Image 1: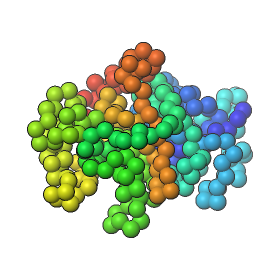
Image 2 (image 1 turned 120 degrees about the horizontal axis):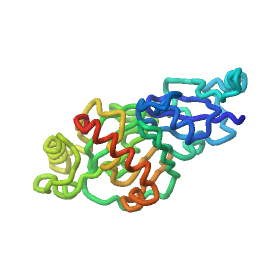
Image 3 (image 1 turned 90 degrees about the vertical axis):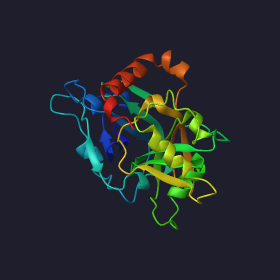
Image 4 (image 1 turned 135 degrees about the horizontal axis):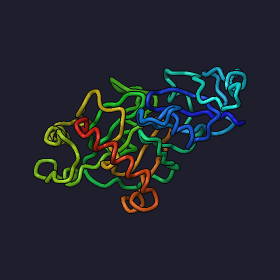
Length: 264
């Protein structure tokens, strides 16, 4: 059986497994008893990855089938500072697993040349996860957060852009109907603090954030990058979600309804 490497984002870790991506995502979300456990999000590491930071020398010895022939589900290689030590060029598809084990594959694509809206809302996913309002487009935001010259920075960041609706252009007077956030007026206040009049480019909406994504609020897609570059993983359109990916979408929405009190 082949051995795969995955960068898990919730929580951050480097994991070896004999399970292919869809089975691995289902296992992370439900365990061996197929019971809802929690959402999972991970990158598949491309075959042939080598590292001077991680000890990969004994993976083949540790990641072997069980005595009954069942594949080894997980062998943890590292649980700290993982994302920053796996080069962008080594990252393959991004997989999103619902709490019930439905898995959606997102492949890297070309980022939009001109981001829509004057204001943006980003949920950082790894290695930190605050909710941030910003005037910066995704590429600029990525550069800003990973700038070692900044007062606070991370070497590499994975984040998702969330929908702001009319607030993206008019945070003071834009209507908020349809936005799935329980603290939308706080988001409005944070957005109005940004711009030339204040000199602020970012404002923290929630310091802690949630280690789960409100998928119905995803605007563009997922991003991972640093000072050298950025990868973009476009999220399917609503039409695609309701047709081609209906089973995953329905499962993701059911989970969001169940935890409605925890929405941002």
